[in-house]
Length: 377
Image (tube, rainbow, N blue to C red; front, side, top):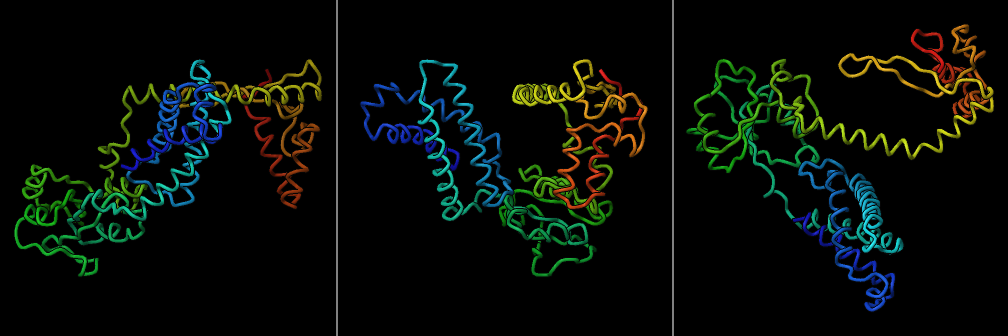
């Protein structure tokens, strides 16, 4: 529902920006821009896809108000950038940059108003899963300790069922009394999921009753899987080695690997083109300081994924003598440092007010000058 409202707000935001830009004159809009509905669809698609990518429609959103604000601004900004590229690639859908910027501001305001109103006026309890915990011992205590609203965004806790012979480590008022079968209890309380949190499952695990619940459409979840899903953390105190083996968080299918590779290449290419001017300036600074025949880079062997060794190219930040391996220790750092690195040293001292820390920061920068595998190129 919120997604539909925000998609409508995105489309209306671009139309409102056109009216604001041309002073509420529809004839001027048609004359300058042409039909605006096609542009609105492109803008809405780009912005909506960006908000989904930023996780703003996740049912287990854990960010607070400030975090939501930052995500909305970043998502709309990315959507405006994507839409601008689309308008550039499709010339007959050209739109003025001022209209696009106004649309971004209008959409940010509308999304914040909708989200604040939605959180205040709409009760989202009906959209949450109703969870029943089977266990009352020490393993069930972490669920009882989930008191923050950010930890309970995806579920409503019905209560705890005490297995026969298990210790009680919870307040008695949180127990749910059962007089018959577990399935009848779940149907009476409209339970969607059962979390098995027994201290000792090998002796008193009600396999038959849990199987009946599973056949009735009620999910049965292991404790650690539930905690990892709802809190985004793995509780070490309840971790079983078998969970690491049979857990679903380590799947790496071909589609996921290929999509991750494509995303890595796109991000690396974008950063490369954006930092090209800075890299040219850095190369020019090294050349002007050490001469045209001095190397700009040095390469170093690193260990990557799967133990594969690859060569890493880095801008040379030390003197040629330091690269040749003649310098070692702090003396080598001082000998290999150039004027550009002396400036870094002074900046570190000025910010920290500590000579030793400034020296340490510069030393880290040159650490590895005498290590094997580093050669100038």
